[in-house]
Amino acid sequence: MDTPIWTSPRTNAPKVFFMTKKDNKSIKVVLPPLKKILIIGGGGRENSLAWALSKSPEVLKVYVAPGNGGTEDHSNCYKLNIDDTNSDELINACKSLEIDLVIIGPEKPLAAGLADVLRQANLVVFGPGKQGAQLEASKQWAKKLMVEANIPTAKHWTATSEKDALQILNAIQTPLVVKADGLASGKGVTVCNSLTETKAAIKEAFTGKFGEAGTKLVLEEILKGPEVSIFAICDGKNLRILPPAQDHKRLLDNDEGPNTGGMGAYAPTPILTKKQLQMIEEEIMLPTLKALIKKEIDFRGVIYAGLMLTDEGPKVIEYNCRFGDPECQALMPLMGPELAKVLQSAALGALEIGPKLLPKDILSVCVIAASSGYPDNPRKGDKISINLEEKEGLPIQLFHSGTTINQEGELITSGGRILSIVAQGTNYQNAFKTAYMALKKIDFKGIYYRCDIGYQVRNNEPSFE
Ligand code: AMP
Ligand code: GLY
Image (cartoon, rainbow, N blue to C red; front, top):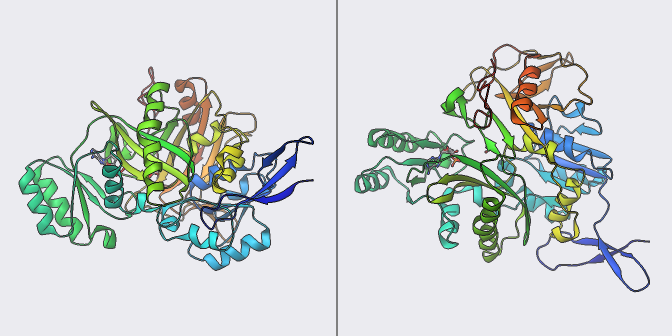
């Protein structure tokens, strides 16, 4: 018979583990049962997480709040119509549904302190509290942490007024990256090609384009090199690194057009060798976690480091405090059924008790279909037709982001990024071919997707029309 025991005095998070008698002499500490999970968020990241976590043999139900039009397409996944700002209702739902683990997907509720509120209600939560979420919610805070911990990053200056910012620019006399300090839905960064552009970006930020997020600016030197997204699952003291992923942030082919939340991804990216990934773990990810510990922050969630591989080695261009989207969608099919218990062990501050992560030895790719007008003003409310044959057995997944079901029961567009096809293969050429063929079977007015996702790793066919 399993007996609850209590460990770890670190935070007010619940820390109930179970001990099982292995034989007469020794005991084994194991994790509590994990039958029901609640995922908070409504994008493709949450849709793919729900799909992956429902594959754990122990998990009976995965709820997603508020979810989207695709939540209930996955077996054992259920949509809850509760907004992430309504913590009372979320807590009530967790209690009445007997939720064993809550996973918070997006940065906004994390930055608003939802994880703290849920932990105070004695729930087991994967996602950092408000303090830890500063990694993403304040670029200045994150920069300070990097400087203190000697983590390689771009040189930077902060400014709280247009006058200060222009003075800094005047002294440096070189084009800069202009970043709003706070959360700006991926739109707060301008990489400037000239002094005139830099001046214009500074002026624009201080006219209130980013609201409260832009009242302080971080100005950065421009780095050059390919980018890579690294995710570490953290339990407050240890971490586990996922396969490295490559995102495509620009809207248009050839990495042109405005920055978006991400138009496609693939993982693992061959851009890093195992040795380089280990170096990144030792010289960037672990020092980041140690710096958080030094600030007495018990970070239980994902540290996402956006890196640029420069001639001087990898440098951090930004941190996020959650899984990246679309990278998460590409990564989920690489995860085994142990993922749910790994996230639970991290939420309990005890990765060492959880299973080992065993990513599959295959490649996974994701192509996002967006609505015309994305990212500034996407058209919404159009019917979506999906003519994919039986997906069972095929190495593809359809994940929804900005979709909803209208009163007539029809699936319609309701956001910027609408849905994605994720496909696996033993080589990138085939995996992308499968994904692009499947995309042809999906339609809605104004559908748009990049044709060159993965151009970095495709040899013969750089673009699928
Ligand atoms: P962020 O939101 O900070 O990730 O920035 C969005 C994008 O802007 C990044 O993915 C990079 O492509 C670019 N970027 C940000 N910082 C720099 C930098 N210091 N040098 C060059 N490009 C940058
Ligand atoms: N894919 C970039 C992000 O999630 O911020």
